[in-house]
Length: 154
Image (cartoon, rainbow, N blue to C red; front, top):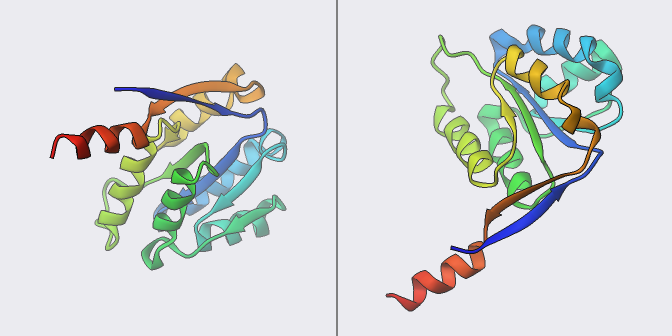
């Protein structure tokens, strides 16, 4: 199967998402990493984005709340190549009414080879990586070629 090489630029497009019980942890993390984050474009799901902006002063473009389609909007931006880094503090101990949307977002991030942190420790490792200050080439499946080959076999 053919692959395409995409480049994540020095300035990252970072999505910030947190379940309700993790929002304050996300705000604390953003405050602790404010100097790094201010050099990147930030977006997030509705309430999380608003709370981060209010608490830290960081500009965070807000999409819909997760249960109202925000996770799907972030996933669509990944497909469009407009998000290249995701920090999603999820709550593994609480059932989420929009769990299928969360799983779809995680899946699409994996399909498009997007770095994703699901907890603070992973987010700390990712944001302090030397790759945060560099361009990064990664490969994704050449979906057009894949579709063409699959269609020819039908």
